[in-house]
Image (cartoon, rainbow, N blue to C red):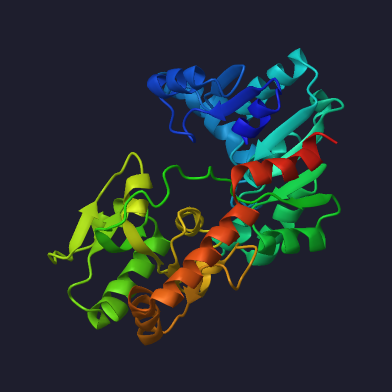
Length: 362
């Protein structure tokens, strides 16, 4: 979104929270040098613990009640704003008259709630996730959903990353809910590698959904596959895999995934749980790679069919979809073309920018 606003010559003040964003001074300098914002403000939501009495009396105790964490009136929704952070944020709002105030995630929505310092700015929230679904095992679902809808409704415009979330939010929120899907650049040097080293590529970070799904794949599907298939697995998910077979290449971290995607034939997205659009699926589609996934793998995709994805939750059928793509040239060509078409129609950056213009430049 920052790249979009920059391309449209917006003047941007970027605000983030030091601890939540896991910033350090090197990160801040690098971000400033990237030129994505005119001014960068990384605010610490809490003071140092050097003076423990001050920390407890003037930070911990007030925020215990401000964030509704007291046991007798729990909020049932993650609140990230602290009194200290809000005071610093309001100081920025006082200093300027903004045309837009753009907030990421409903957990920060209280920054604009009943806030006179927003003045006449158009308030926009980029929801990113359906937070009630993400925290359904921690919180009361009814109370959490009510609070999430209330927070999203504080804004003039709400952006949803998936068609499912756009549908849900638009049913309950009275404001304008707009689809703003993931945006990726068109990859360079597509099809530069003719002989590809990897039959399958699987990219996954370390989270509970990926751990559960990887476990399912390697226990239920992998034993059904030919042992001569070359598989590349990239990401922190490798820390939870014990497999050591010679046909598997493990890459814990890759600065640039482009070479790996272009050196693979088919992408995998085993995914049993989770919400929202899967980045790895859209990335694979951008390289014209067919994807084999579970039902959760196509969550968030605008087109559910003819999109380059072969979908099944049955281990044997999941395996058959992989083999079909690797052995049937006409099927592979068809799905690769579907993958490219789905990407360029829905997720290619320039096409998405034109749709955002209808929101921000009208």
